[in-house]
Length: 239
Image (cartoon, rainbow, N blue to C red; front, side, top):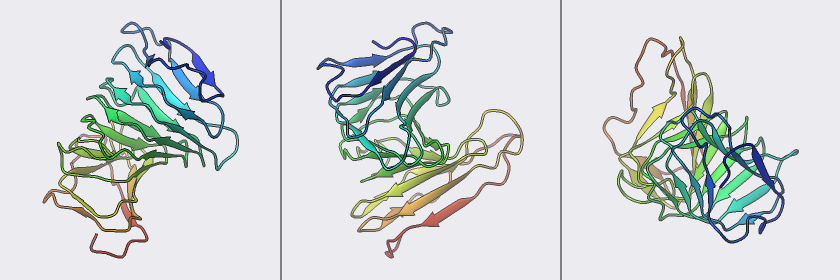
């Protein structure tokens, strides 16, 4: 178990063959446990669970330089339910691939540190929790289905792009999907005039179609300001 501080690994087999738990043991302990992938080209096969205990918990791939990629092929189980205190992070210009299943009802917060990418490539993931993309990060997905149906981005009901005044990007690279999931642009819990934005990047070989008659899941409160949704991508189909 990783219960406090940073555990940095530089070899694919550094964690052995057992399961790994990232847990901040105690309701207010604030020990900030973190598993840090600290080398390019890693392939980590361990199953990893992020628990619902304590405060900040992180899974990070953030090296010096850009263009590096590492991968976690084990199952990632998310149990933490508060979206502001957990982070799956790829540093600026870096790519973290999650090729194993993502499961659980906890939050998946993707943090990009101004340009990092997290790729979800397992089309059988049945994660049902919140998905939040922030800090200028990109979440790349190979599939998306209706709420309640497994896909690379899980089986949840919505995706949130941006937090406070930050931005987030959802990049689709699949071969044609439709979904009734909603998109929320920006999220916050306090403050004033929050103006974060989101981008949907349709780069698949087929179209990405949103079928819900209410596309945007509204964010309400005194702090909500004008926010921007940007649509880009190379696919020329009926997105």
